[in-house]
Image (cartoon, rainbow, N blue to C red; front, top):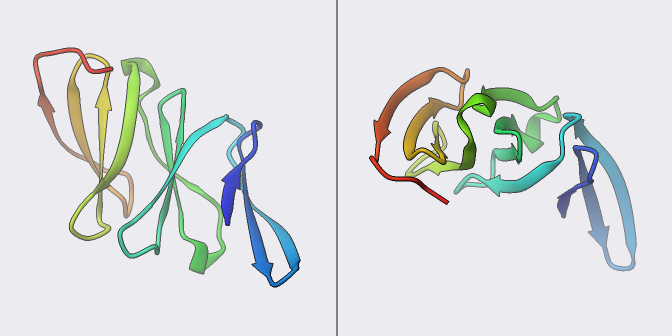
Length: 118
């Protein structure tokens, strides 16, 4: 079970029968608004209210890697672009949809919807 604390800490609870272990996986120092697993559960997106998106790979037990920071563009949401786990899509309140590489956070493409998104 993964969850985030108010302070931006990603925590993993390993539950087995009536026993559990707690592991702090990452500290991004920003409140996490949502956690999204990739379709094959190999990657986890950590999305903040400020518009920063991090990638965390549970099997690698490394730090969360900052993929994108859309804080200046009124970020609304992000998710995996399926099929596969190679790309992330984000949307801003102004209606700009952006596609990012999950491997290194490279901006790949954008599309303006021409309408506000909530």
